[in-house]
Length: 491
Ligand code: NAD
Image (cartoon, rainbow, N blue to C red; front, top):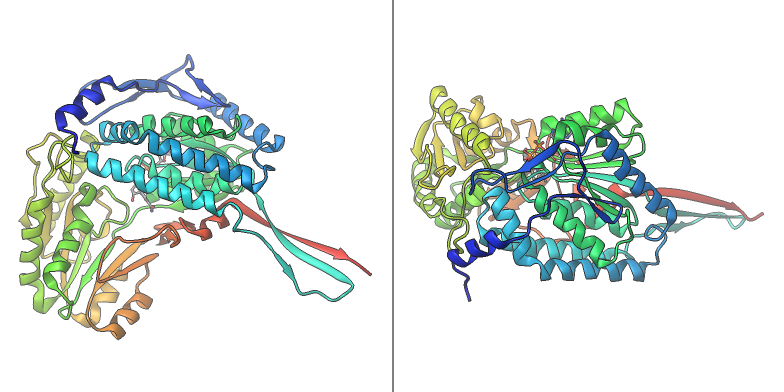
């Protein structure tokens, strides 16, 4: 049964909102500066949270370290860790609507997508609960007078710094493998979506994570995020966000304790459509979904359409037609596919970029301005884009597709002409060509005759300035474990 927008609105009005961070198993209200939690759907602050300063970040890291050294989680047997992580997933499911509402309120994401985000975060966390006892070291061949093995050990204190666009999913990508491996975690959710992050961490504690194993520090990037990046007792930073801030974390590590830094950053992902695509109408539907889904506020949004010249005009027409079904609406209506952008700053940034594209000589084939809903932007298709233009090179993070027409032989070169390398899509019926392109494309994920599909057991990460390391799959454990070699002399 669908819930009406009026019902969702009533629930949103009655929703208790956290006004605290979460340290060492307890809510932390604090007495210092505050961070306002805001919403594109309301004027004024939703709630006020502590803006954790260096001292408070230090307290969170100290709690995480105590918990790690105490061993209640880091040394817990695999069955116990599994039990608690499965209980965590059950709580996520039990609080599905509450968490989804927090996401919609804070980010403007359509409620149906927010609900899907909770469901897929649950599947992701379940994968890592199941993986607790499936990642281990090796006993290696040695001469008879020796015995050598390698063991995987948790690293220690992990700082997870996350963006606002997937307020539950992005933290779960980090917490899942970090906790499964036995680490302690300090989460710093984005200032735009801290409420969902804090609730997630509280549910982890309720599920039975020992005090200090999972903490949330709320605050700004410049104060709270920086303090984590520079902290001498953080062993690992796992970050998702912009490339510019990712680079800052590399610098913080160099200036402090050489902590490992894993980065999932921005993108400008190409969707390549060749004239021999199996079904151009289907390709157009995917191309539109690839950029307009989530209002384009998605890291692997397919924001560049690279289309073979011979079909350019006809294909753009199909994409323009498809774009009509991605118009922003009321995010609390379950029929709405896309809500407004996250805030006025992001809205103005996206509208400015469309202006930049026009000034550079691109043509607006559809959209190009504010949508009927406050802070929404119309799905926009730019044509006549040259690969050198800013709208072809920079991440806009909004519903703007830059279309480049090119010869079939040049598609890989045009696609790879970017500082980013997060994802790429290819549409062709020629299996040899598809394999060749999958190999040639400089991207962490390549989708063939589809876009943005995956499984928990497949890694997700970026090449080039889109990142270092991967989330998802058993490969994610690389980030949260250290390999120890042990050699016994038996002679
Ligand atoms: P952002 O880089 O502005 O912020 C990300 C996090 O970093 C936030 O928690 C923020 O508080 C913190 N931060 C900001 N400035 C900081 C500083 N000076 N020092 C320390 N920490 C700081 O990114 P955003 O606007 O929240 O998210 C959008 C970006 O995230 C886009 O570039 C998008 O592509 C990227 N993203 C990437 C992936 C991926 O998997 N590759 C997934 C989602 C989003």
